[in-house]
Image 1 (spheres, helix red, strand yellow):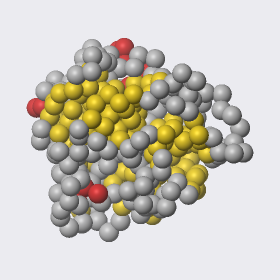
Image 2 (cartoon, helix red, strand yellow):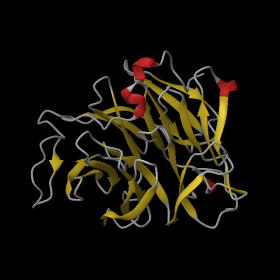
Image 3 (tube, helix red, strand yellow):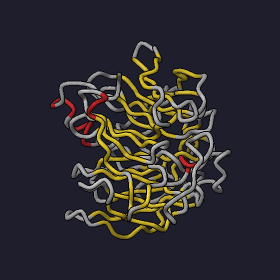
Image 4 (cartoon, helix red, strand yellow):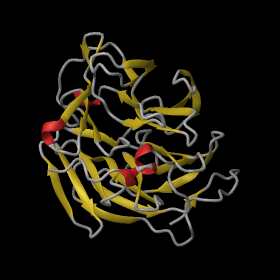
Length: 317
């Protein structure tokens, strides 16, 4: 396996060692999404929206169902206390599942200006522990959600507040906002737009104010999701951006230069870091779950930084 470099891109000092090999860990699913690795108990949760199920992959290779129905859950992450945060397509809500079980399910966001959210799709926790999420319309379409009319007239990017009926709207000028992630220093929030085939960059001030939104990278395919398009997105410790696109996972430098593509034989929907050293990239690609060992670790999220303070798991039943 190799990194497919652009002709004029400088050779990166990271990414795929010569011995790196893409491993297919499991297959036979409908459409995998939302991978998240538990930093203490060392298992991976992932979604299968059309199947309406959440599954768990263990280090011994076992895969089992942990929640069905799952409200057609999509993107997932942990907060600093290792509570699981879940985007639910079927309910159009963002929820937090606390470690003490089902009865502690908390709705974080459900409406904006009195209208139901479209379908929270992907979620990230910022360095200040505030929660950000995207809200395209995919969960109101057949297969990936429950067909029903859209109440809002736009597809937005939000930050969670104390009121689930009043999240803070950060941007409303996306076509279909999807994956999002922070730069390692927390000063840039990247958000991609699937149908426009681009990534935008927002400046995040120490006060929490978000501004900007300029194009960071465009031309990530042509918006045809069948061939691969911007969807899941993460950064590594050096600030390089990893985004799904045609051919697999595009690797983009902090300066917005495409360094190459990690080739994957199926269309990739999402990706995330895992294993104790955070150098394994778990890849949700259509019917299969893959992994590959990289030469650099992922950018720290709050749950990765302080996981040792939390005593137990979340998200299983």
